[in-house]
Image 1: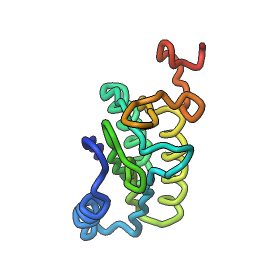
Image 2 (image 1 turned 90 degrees about the vertical axis):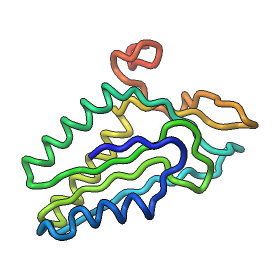
Image 3 (image 1 turned 180 degrees about the vertical axis):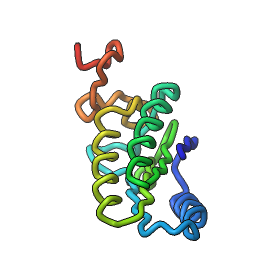
Length: 148
């Protein structure tokens, strides 16, 4: 399940809803990862642009990988502005055993950082400034591609 939300994520609501959806399905583990926007380098927060068609394809490919191991993935991400000390990203693996879940959540989050079509901006004094030095270029993404 992939969810996009405007602004900061309601961590308690989202993770509680995911837990309730799977708790009676005989999985052995629900392993979440919650990203929190840090107060660093004078930013007020982050802002995100999401290219949904590619994100959906990327997520669906990961869901198929997880399914082959009897697992499934959940992900929520913010669009727009997210202030410091709030969440912009939550993902979770539901798996039959913890080892499968721990491996999948690590691989999923690492691949998300490298390949998800989400562009990050710093919020500084009410303005969005592209965070190029902390962003991952995507192959075939025009000006933001690895090829440039």
